[in-house]
Image 1 (cartoon, rainbow, N blue to C red):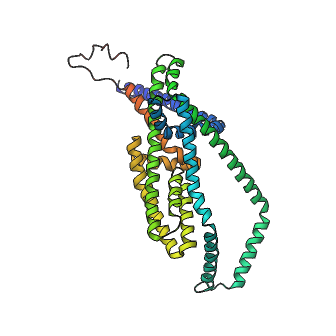
Image 2: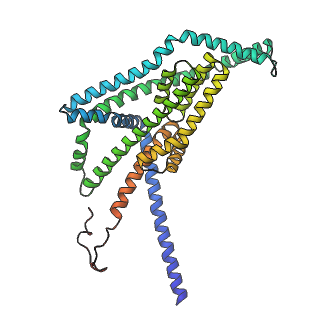
Image 3: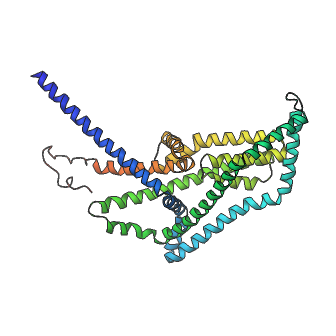
Length: 373
């Protein structure tokens, strides 16, 4: 009897395991198909994502104007123009001082090259001019041989710039329409969806919108912190162009990994050509310390509080996103993880049974609990 019962339980367990495995396999196949479709539509999805992120950044201003009697179209137009003016001012704040000191920087680069050459000629390297000339000739020969690949790289870079400009323009237009008609979206969505979806989807959409806003604000806070700390360090070392470098650091914080590397490289290069190798090493040390504090302390703490994610989840999400999709994956990893958390928390709320009232029997169904809220 016991052997028969044990055999029946084993078969039931196997059937349950097989059913769960098939269901998980279907979920994975569905997710793979969804990601494939997302990749095929990326030229449309990427401007949409950028437009949403820009809207979360500019919506507080548009909401303030709308609450004070401005018409939606006028408020959206003013905010869009202000955003363009601020973006142009940031670019000018970086470009104008650099252009005004371009002569000094050029002289510094030339002097820096001479210093490197003199250093290479002395101990311990003891490289003479003939060896340096041979090295330069070899480099020129390699460049000439790889002219075809360089041309391909240039063409690819130009195509990337054009695609970036098109994406930026589309994102700005989408931001305008989101600012103008955004509050109408949820009521419209409720009218389009049937049954229970008319309640669940708008709630998840509203929570996701709040989460995206928290992400953008946290990124801005991290970028501002980086800009202030690195700017103070550059000012102490007496590196020129402190303000443009600080602004560049703030802007580049919105592009993970590459943005920080680019801003740090520019700061170290300017310190090298203007102040010499010693100050350049000091600036490099300052940037490494600040970047380590940002990546391991500030960013996980700020984003975990604003997005409701543990700091370890933020670090793992950025690592996974970068390994799967590079820079874009690193940029979107944290908000995607936060949106998944929003969906899971809402699903858990709906599946959790409400507590029974005192005096209610176990076999007596509750009228209120039968219909989920």
